[in-house]
Image (cartoon, rainbow, N blue to C red; front, side, top):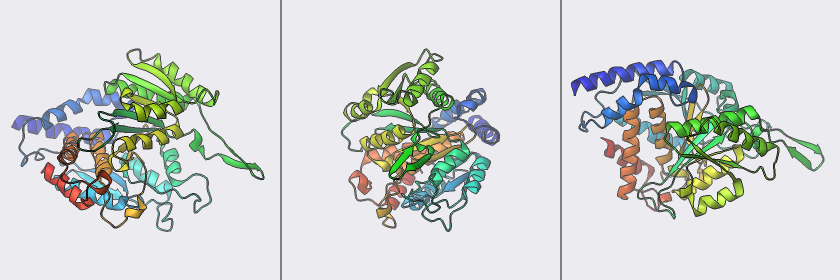
Length: 397
């Protein structure tokens, strides 16, 4: 056991330090690096090695990792406190560089260029949901979130929607991955009023970015032993724009003969999602469709409080809620569900090869939800944010 502990400590120290200095682990560009180092299997073995609760984290690395933290708007600064409380309780070697970034608190918000520099420097970011007002303070069409995605080239958003034990829902055994292209489509902020009372909004679709997100989806399928990728589109109406997206996905599929492929029109997909969600494996789609289906799917498994997401560029990763609602009415009431943000933290820890801590948080959340004794109001209970956070910590340590 001592040899395993010492070997694991050396491996995690070296891998976390080296990989953060190069490429992020779970982006396609660094997949070969991760395979060569062999990190995942070693950490997974250590996690199941039978250590007691007292020494569960004794062999974790002393090298610390810095993560950019954007508290977000609404209730999310409170939920970030829950995340930091849990990480401190388990001794996770994460230091946060906190930056206020908000469109509704514009007077105290950092500039988008400074936020981009921080995330590029640290390579990882934990971010709460940002409120996007109908009319921005600056009068620009692009909101801060869109500027951040463009500046970082965050092209892929991954939302893993999965049924939680103990959470009441109409459908059981849901396990869907929604992959959304983030940098173009309807969210290009290219709008103008051509004549009085007539507004034109441009939807941008390019072959290069459509192929890039398609390749990401098929790579994800291979890495995670998924069997089928479904391209969600509206090519029957938008024959050129969505037609190009569908064509790009179909062409990329030829490079992955072991992964099944199908196409589905977006309106049919929404109906199928609420009637038979178990049929889906991986869904890949343009920007707007992804935003809609992310929220729809979150509602199937318990709501915005239980679904996390990850967004990737070739160089960095941002972890944020899967359904981005700031829950303004809950501010200061200690009633919001911290599950989504805790799962964001778990995904972030896994991304930087701290699998031990990541799995501990995820397992603890499942245990608390399955027990059903501590539930926040969105899940039919009466427990507070702090009570749920404390229950997760007790389940770990």
